[in-house]
Image (cartoon, rainbow, N blue to C red; front, side, top):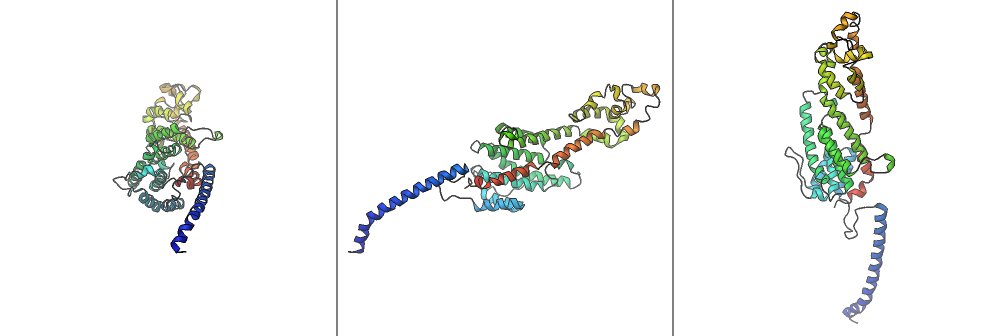
Length: 354
């Protein structure tokens, strides 16, 4: 029998066997794929596109991010997304930024870490000494923040992006603005995050990003109040000038001391039994005595004498402010905490980027 005849004769049998084999493989693949999907949720693996896997570039960038090699991670993700490098002119915003939103979020995290290197760390930005190099540091920081916001806001405002990632993108945008002390803008982004995922109690089992956004929002609001009341710090730091500026400073103190020493601010006008403690807060116009004013010297000539030691009293609100700041600094950095939480789900999430 000729070779061609043997081939033609065997073809039907082989074809039927191949069909049975292919069908079995298909059923097995569907079963395994379905089990994998149910076990891992949205794993990013699509049986219709079985050859799509994690990008090695993203994997390496994530490894660099975890290892603190931010510059290398930034360059890798900028190449992967096609954004070009972050520069004075900003950063590119091609369609791939929205299409590969997980990689875009990672780039936002990397740029946050790069920006944090210029000056104080996140949560410590108010402790900057204002030295000659501070302006340059803030300019470099703001450049990185601007680039990060272009990318992060693009995915935060895209309705096609999963809602949990959109909330995290708004949260990250808030942290970026917080980092450069634009607290009003930070509050807006935290509000956007909370609109998507509200801050629920930890025992509710809800997504924790809402709680993180609510916490940072509260701190940002406090910083806004601190900025409004910044004028009162000068009289406190220079006691000789305190009597002249104390009336305005007292008004500011009542605003800036909400929740800490509000009773002193409210009682400054009619201090009653508080004596020289409130008088120290109110400055020299009252002669160091509550409700007495100019009559204090005539009725009790010895009363004004303890006034100088009691000028140290305004340190009490400052100490309370410092304790609040200490609590904020001692708390885990929510940006780092979020990054660590994402690391556990990173394999699942990154597989969605093709």
